[in-house]
Amino acid sequence: MKILFSKSHEWAAIEGKTARVGISDHAQKELGDLVFVNLPEVGAEVKAGEVLCDVESVKAVSDLYAPVSGKVVAVNDELEGAPELINRDAMKAWICEIEVSEVPSDLMDEEGYQKFIKG
Amino acid sequence: MAKRTALYETHVKHGGKIVEFAGYELPVQYEAGLMTEHMTVRKKVGIFDVSHMGEVVVKGKNAETALNAIVTNDIRGMYDGQVRYSLLPNDKGGAVDDILIYRINGECFLIVVNASNADKDAAWISSHLPKDVEFSNISDKVSQIALQGPLAEEVLRKILPEEFIPKKYYSFTKETSIRGMKCLVSRTGYTGESGFEIYCGNADAPKMFELLLEEGKEEGILPCGLGARDTLRLEAAMPLYGHELEEDIPINEVGLGFAIKMGKEDFIGKKALEAHTPEYVRVGAKVTGRGIVREHTDVYCGNEKVGIATSGTHAPLLGYPIAMLRIKKEYVDKPLEADVRGKRIALEIVDLPFYKKA
Image (cartoon, rainbow over all chains, first blue to last red; front, side, top):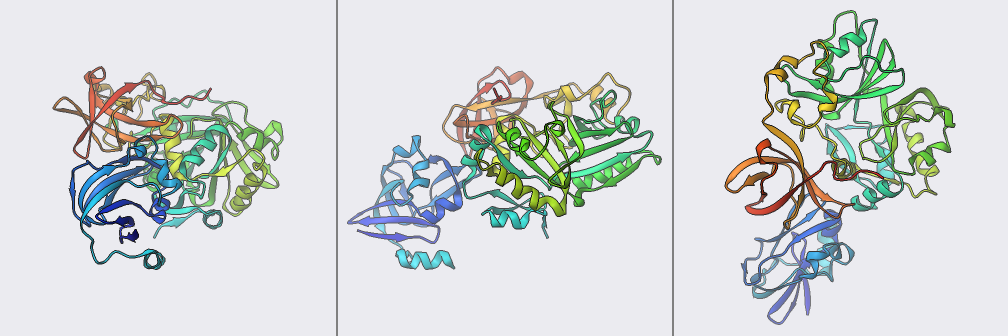
């Protein structure tokens, strides 16, 4: 399994043809306390870099972007009742699983991402 | 460029996340985060920098009469040391602002105005006062710190003798001092909890803020940002200018009748209000569908757009999303939905305030 990060602060844990997707710890800190996760629809075709779903903090709604292209095959229903799981452990609180058709070449590994957010 | 309050460095030191609001650089939250800050004010005590608020002073023999002619509430018969909420109406019956009027004495009043309106209000008020009434804008000299929550009084008692602590809601003690720092302390706030607002000179503000934080340690005090200030006022259903109140929203449609005394003699906007039959009402809604309804969201009854949400958020204490709506009054009993980015979300009208302290 390898974990890659997008410039828009999502992560994709890719294993074989499937990627589990979430947001980075940095993103969760920036967003603040999350109070609602509007999960994507199972079966939806998504394209890397396009809107995947949205999350709401007390302050604002924020779009999340698909780090990889493919089809949503599962969503983490647990987040519906407990969006704070993302704040608690963003790398564990996956949002959905995508059957991957394409992985963009500009995704970064952990080290590259850490450099990226430090600017 | 955005202004900074005298407490800017203090916010940075305590980990405040700085944003621009109403022309000021202020913390939206500190490290604890909005939800924790909100709950701390509900259960214990929190401290806010509200120095961005504006303060003007109106003075003179005719100050009371002159002021009474430009505000909607009746300020006659107040006692020295009393605070009264009022709207500052325009000629059309809309709101220039909503304000707090502090009666220092019968010939001197302190008016506290919203930061976003401070310059506009100063120009408006001064141009509507007769020449023999003195007007001064002291906004840039005054800092304001809000100490809010059920344990606020316990904290204040440690540094201010009992007799200087205002007893009644909406009263104040002027010319008092805390550890040698001159200040005015009022029992007011914008959170729906009991608490105080402390006005002091800019030079003393950082010391005052640190002192309150230090003295409140035992009580679990936390510094709180603008984010919590907004969610707290929203749970308490307090109006916010630019949301529930606007220049072109008639003030007899916003549920603030207690502050509009149509029976008193002429005041600005009175004729316009007499001529205007309210079409809209301000109501509270619990969001029963899935999602958060925020300001400017359209509200529908079936296919008809019947109003908008003027404020909305997830209510931290209640644990569900709430919104204040401005809707046509004939729809208050009808099934309503909010259109959130193309998705319909069910609303249930509930009594205001959403939250009332025990």
